[in-house]
Amino acid sequence: MSDFLFVTWDGGGNVPPAAGIATELAARGHTVRFIGHEGNRRQLPGTDFTAYTRARPFASVEKNSLLAHIKMFGDRGMGADVLAELDRRPADLVVVDCMAFGVIHAIERAGIRYVLLEHLYDEYFSAKWLKGPIGLGVRAQRLAPQRGLDAAALRLVASAPELDPAGRRDRPANMVHTGPVVTGTPANPSEPTILVSLSTYNFPGQAAALQRVIDAVAGLDARVVVTTGPAIDGSALRPSSNTEIHDWVRHGELMPEVSLVVGHGGHATTMSALAHDIPLLILPMHPMLDQPMVGRSIAEAGAGRMAKKTAPSGQLRPLIEELLDDGPHRSAAAALGAAIRGARGAATAADRLEAVVRDEVPQS
Image (cartoon, rainbow, N blue to C red; front, top):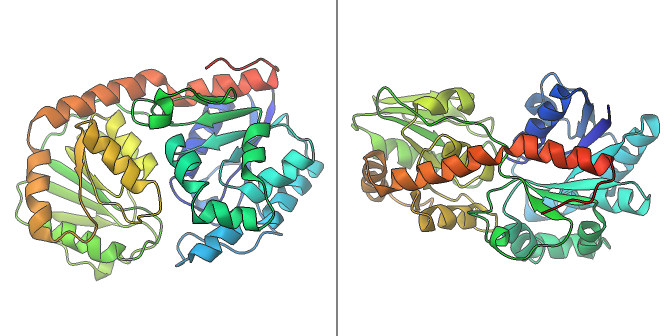
């Protein structure tokens, strides 16, 4: 059996795919451990976890500026921590979050074999993120992102090629789409149920957007479950009579009873909803992230709609009513759900990682 070290950061939707793949590897008898920010500890309960000590402080619940993100993604202290962990306890393979370029820089130059885990559309990561302000900021720290991508033994894109434009084009030889690392069965709600979840990350205007959604569903003949995450104080929201507000609910347990998800376009939540054949209304919380691209792809696939996070309740109400009802959006969501379940994302990713350890050449 092999020893895998997963390297992550305190983000939100970046963690579940890594955790899902790690769980699959552990079930196969491999040794799996994580290193990340202290905030990752609560996201990875029961795992063998080590927190960074040399890395600069970073927490997703804080209001982090663009500059703070750039410094974190290029943080050489994270790389030093990973090298120290590997010196303490070597691994057969290191699986690194694709955005942690301070780590990628360190291990690539140390000659350590690694795999990159892309937890989002590669179209966004390669064409937008790396070429935008964060990618430029990483380069300004004298890091070489493209070199890090090219040197990876494998780039695992844990996303749906049916939705990711990069999945429908020629890809680099070391890149494969595994399908999203989510599980699900077709939802079968006993009553109309709406899940409202606008990220565990702290985005500007998020609380106000949640309130507008709550106001939009007031009086609807539906159960409405709102999850705020650690960044939003749920007690400050004004619930309607059909709304229940929770700091946290395990989405995987709730989604089999859900008819519609109102989300922010976060990749993890979106793919989980589709894995349960659930259509979505997407309100992107940040224009520079992948959320607008995810929202457009869902709308173009016919599996939901997208609106601005500042959309008033009166504009949201008819969209929610439309998507809560029957229609072609449900068939479109079900078709995507079948493809996602069939991809077996966690198992496929684990297969690929085992092949890298065996020095097998990946086949796309």
